[in-house]
Length: 355
Image 1 (cartoon, rainbow, N blue to C red):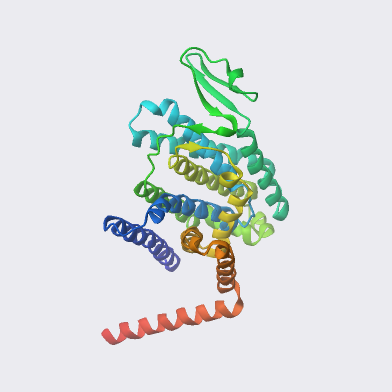
Image 2 (cartoon, rainbow, N blue to C red):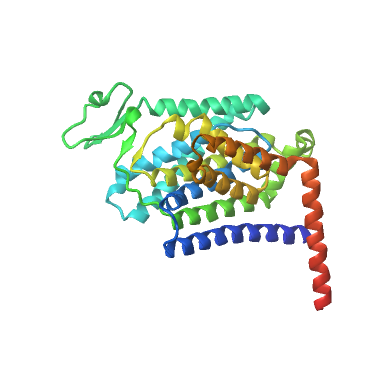
């Protein structure tokens, strides 16, 4: 009963944190005091939060190191974008976005399952290397694909657009490295926050469920978990597939915030996967609230430091080091624990005095 109360309290504070963030941004936006730079970051903040929370399932809850998260995001982004410019073109924009999100999550989950079959047999650095390779393969394969549609259906080739041999009225959707153009751009901050809440609901319920406890038991002691009959492959696959599906949702949101979608190294490459991992590590591995806060701070900070020009990334690096020390240094951890304990004692004392 005590554990359930603690879990409810932690979930409630996480939801309240996101709600407070949304209300502050909305008030700031409505007053007209928000800069155009900050306004342009609102949707990116949402998909970065989803990516951070989803990767924490694998890294924090399951205890595995994955560097292929940008690959699943890429799969979701292009799945949603292809639907948007084909079947979704005649639909109301919110219906189109809803179906695109479902499709992006489903296709990314399928890729997660297929990749997870061989990959989850590996551990540690080997798992990280293979998932990194998957992300790079996905990005490079998409850059070679030309996809078109006409009355006869879809045509695909890896040569050039002319090789599609489209009939009259046919349309090229993916143009190799040029990507997909003419996207609807119907993502907004409110939709992004709703998706963050849905992602949190899924992740927090997984953590507090029987399956989540089994995944964490495997993380803590694989041999002991196997000895009591837990299926290691089943639960690791569950965490990996859910993480991939949520990354696909973030990808769809990302794609619907652009007019043109391209599979560039900047968007879906190695650096993107590392940046998502940094959100998780600096926020605290397994700490969902920390991942959310780290995603917001580390997304806004580089943009706010642009006026420093060449010194911008130096200060960014210093902040990363300071956050890492604050989160992991023994003295800093002990200080935080003493501070929390002191505040807790003070609150209990005040409550007794009031009673």
